[in-house]
Amino acid sequence: MNTDIELPLPPQKDQLVEMEAYARFMQHLRRVPHNRMEIKILSAIQFTADMMDYTDAQIAKMMVDCGLRVGRSGLPMDYLEFADAALMRSGWDVGGPSHSLSALKAYWDESGEDKFAAFRREYSLLSETSAMGCV
Image 1 (tube, helix red, strand yellow):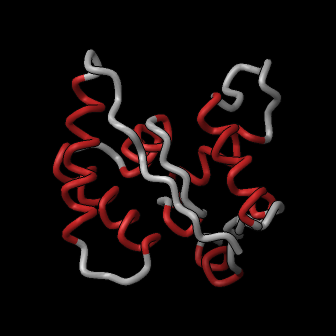
Image 2: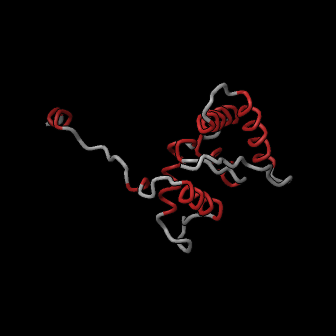
């Protein structure tokens, strides 16, 4: 599996929120004491989201739009659910993948990520014990 991770580049100067998120993300990325870069990226996304009062998925989307390319293990689950749902639509559909998301998918395919990860979801089922209590 390819481990060449591409870090994001600074956004346009007129994108103030994205620039603040980028600055916080990069500052925290340097401070995370871990050997695996995927864990450092995930931690930096979560820290930035907490500091800016955004969701993890929103910060991950901002960083992917700025050029972050990392394996699925380096991104929050909420963002992966969004990405998988968008990638299942065509580019012409409403809610289809953006250019940056398509580039991330190409990175995943090139690096050897599981091509069927989007289909491996767990759906919660009503268990018998909770169904018995409703009767």
